[in-house]
Length: 310
Image (tube, rainbow, N blue to C red; front, side, top):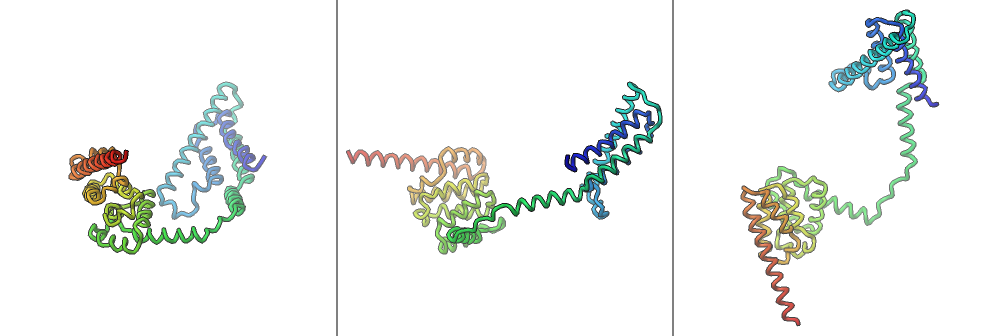
């Protein structure tokens, strides 16, 4: 039997003392006495609920924990006495009063504290945790290729780190410089990481829309589903949805082959319903109709090509 089990066995005497007092017909006035003994046990065995630093007692969390502990111990003391009173009614003992029970409870408090020191117990837990951490194998060092890739990603993450309050005009000014310094697919990867992490703010979403719907970068971004990523990033923002829809319609007019990188027509239909009553609804509807027209045109060209090649 380890020390924790011995401490639990010793603490049992605390409750048996209150039961014995009730069994010996202790009056209700014994309840505050046992409440004090129970609180003494709580202070000794659960010091985390009773900080020694007086400055911490202005914290409402500390006060709440202490009040909760006091209420629980009061209920336990009364419950133990009530069990004793019930036993006295069933199997009477000599009415010697509460003192045998008081002594038994005090012995339980002392024995529990002698067997188990909470401070040493916490230190032992920490020591075992530290030993387990030391036994873990060290993390494998990053290869040069992986380290280089991390560095490239960090560089992109820093240049697209627009704050939420960045004006739209500033974003529009900066994006041409960024696309001149960095390959559009690298920038798109950075925006994809942001969107996946859920940390993309409206200014960054605007920058992504500008990148994904720029005809100058359509060829470089072909196959990367840039427009679909931008559409997901602006979902729920009527103003950015309107901007995306207008620019994507213009992109499809110049580069019909960008159709495959954009959002699906059902997704656009759902966005149109959600944006109903806003200017974005009309532009999304125009985009959806333009997308359907481009799909029909592409299907017709495919059929025509098949007819020319028997």
